[in-house]
Image 1 (cartoon, each protein chain N blue to C red):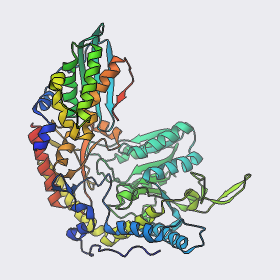
Image 2 (cartoon, chains in turn brown, green):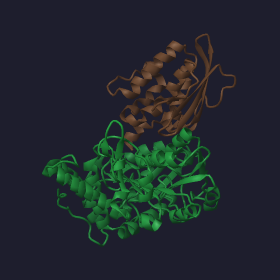
Image 3 (cartoon, one colour):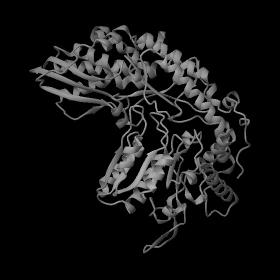
Length: 149
Length: 418
């Protein structure tokens, strides 16, 4: 159980139960669908941009605790950021969940650092990264379905 | 070649402790817990007899089969042929040449779709399947239907996961050219009334393929008694190696079917003008087959029949009943698949906990289950769930292992309270 608490941090469990920015954003400028065919996780990201700043972002869908909490915390994190800042955060996040030797930069990652435990569960990386891949597709205004398979 | 010396197999009276000793992997520790392997519907573990047979073949008997005049080739050919005989015996087929070795059930079904299907199914014709099919018994027919302009029809199931036989019967129409149904559902555990299905289809002159991937290692299958036209199963779920599968086909149908793949071993003579094909079953076995796999499967069949389906069936039914009762006690757990006639499969969802999280948490206790859609997405849609968690038992599982699963599920409940 103690190892599991590294993966399922309280923050993650809270965001799974009470996700932030959950729901369709009416009149969104951008949206994209993400799908993880292995486990059936599905989500849609909605986003409004002012110039290149994310003014509002939300998500809708179903998935495991890791993918839902990741989407919730991601939407909190990128709101108000420029596209360049959000892309940079995505890179940092991917390193966080995949690179076992990478130092965890709490200052840069903020609450997203709670996903550090995912690096010990390689099969769950795609759960944690689905929302981010989908967000990037929304940036690029791809309406194709993104998968993390 | 002689197969390896038989290692201990279970006595006629079913003794699960003795059986467990035949499966070396069951002694493995996973995250400081003894492995509790409940992912048997995905693949079963291998008894020492199969491991020894594979090792002995490669160490002492490896050669390519057919046309070799040297001793090793003769031995390998004999062992390969013997394996076919063992499978014939398992299925009670009339003749050994009705047994075609393939890679797996998927290839067996594709073979029928492309060889039998392209010859016998035309534009506007129909292929009838059920709502509980594995993707391997959906997609080959979709491909065929797309190629020839035929139509795929799907018989419905009820909320328990039981095939609605009256609807199924109604869907066998004048354009139905083939029925293809799963014997035992990998996602629900439902055992379909295949005998009745064959009778209903044959009464209308429609041949039947049965996908026996899940059934063949849980219950005796007699293709003559069933009177089915094709029966497909895979070796790795029957305690044998991966990469070897079986298609049983009624001789008269196999005879009229064109080859599925061309190449070596499947020909009688080749000229640039005209090639004639080999007799059954070689017509359908182009190229060097998985010789070791077939011989290993033969050993698995020997092992299975030595243990005996009587003992296996009784033991697994006890595990299923015990597991069903135990899981029902877990707060917020709902079983998916509650047909009256089922085997082996305990699929479920838990309120407030996604199956993927369930799988990760029980794995930390050394309990291996499968989570996801189990290659049955239309079935998940039917039950309105994105995925399920699935525990599936085999002959070597115990009530204590079910208890370990339930204890691990209590940890899920602590992490995700309802």
